[in-house]
Length: 327
Ligand SMILES: Nc1ncnc2c1ncn2[C@@H]1O[C@H](COP(=O)(O)OP(=O)(O)OP(=O)(O)O)[C@@H](O)[C@H]1O
Ligand SMILES: [Mg+2]
Image (cartoon, rainbow, N blue to C red; front, side):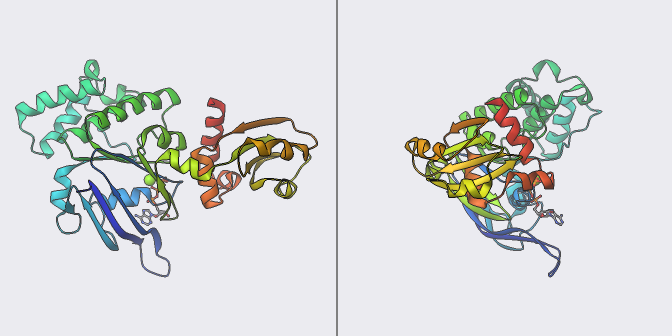
């Protein structure tokens, strides 16, 4: 039995013609013990899918099962079996970490004695043992996120939903949180997480569904997604050339302009193509040759230009530049 099964789910907010199609015929399943990622930009429909699966909203059509329970037929049964960490912070800042967990345990009917043990165990697991009695308002962003994950695990869920677990955290804190998420996998918890960070999906997920405009564009393990794209990716800065010119060069499959004179060029085949391509360029200020990343996979699947992302202010360009700097 898969831990999660989604069959042709659709979610439309509002009525036609103005209705927004947030989820547009999505099907996939997640195996028990798997860390599964939904990767996509802002507005792709990731949170809407999590809301359907966690019974916070009803799908307009289609079916979904979590831990073998149908979300439409037995929402209560689903809620008993899942943990949920929201994209938006939802802790009570005036309470201590421990009190936040106690409040949640009371809602889940966990017995008082069990609660104390479980809370100690979870504070320990998330490295908050020494800080449990401090008010949450004194926590850092990373500590708050860890406390939210601890709360999601209180009643030993079969499936844990993490909606953008590291949104807004600095790179070091993100990496530490990744280690906690990996430790969940070792405990055998099934995790369905969303992210719009390529490197995060790559680092954590056994399989990734690339989602854009409510539809799954590709679904596989990160390595396979990158392998399928194949080829060689060249990041270059050459002020005297244009997107059209580059597109005509030998071996070029795809060109994305990134900014003033900077381009990402995808070459077919292996690096053997590179010399012929380079001979067509006059002046190159900067050149970097890489194998495909999940970012390249996304670009190739959706054709979305990074500079469009920038114009829309959706954070992709910024994330991408941060990734580049980190490399
Ligand atoms: N309650 C709502 N009412 C109307 N439209 C909504 C509602 N919630 C989401 N939408 C729309 O549905 C689409 C998908 O939104 P959703 O929040 O699922 O995307 P997302 O992938 O989680 O994005 P983000 O990365 O920004 O969190 C968007 O166009 C959004 O504006
Ligand atoms: Mg979201």
